Image (tube, rainbow over all chains, first blue to last red; front, top):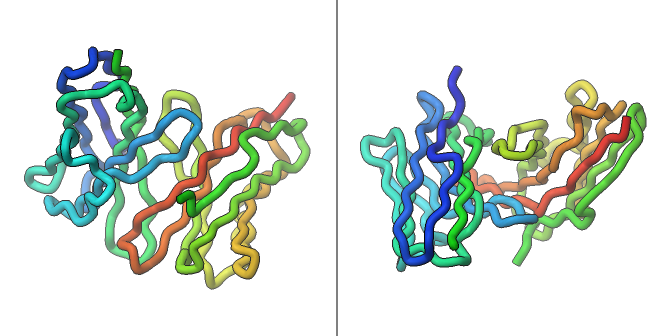
Length: 115
Length: 113
């Protein structure tokens, strides 16, 4: 079974440029998460989707970050414009919301460097 | 406000000995706890979990203990192997928050051959 796929794996951009990350969750997983992981920290939730609906985006900096999950499958996270402080690893995870407690499966992440 | 804390950034253990990784939490509503393992340049992978109705869960060499009164959980790895060298994240969730996980800052385990 294929895991969570993310691309690109690495991205280097100059500040004020836009950037987009793509995630394809595990087939059949209706819940998708985007996390931000800074160096030496644990993942922090940015946004959670149930199918195509964003059910929790309270931690997403909406002035520059946006996300979409059209058709309830793959998802895109965008930053425009990027700032130096956005340098981090962006993780995508998915789970199946068919039980009370749902293990989240993570992709390898996209490491963003903003110069 | 860090609701899940891992106060030891790193731990070194000899191969064959026991590794004990600790995690503390502040939110009494948390009722499900997980440990994830992360290798460099990879995403975290699920290791073991425990529900608040239990105080111990065992899976092979890995055992998680939960002390609800102390709001503390620990992961025991015995015997430790060099392949266990990784960063371990503790995570917690509350059933009324839609499966949102709160992660600790991680503990880097090094198992010395």
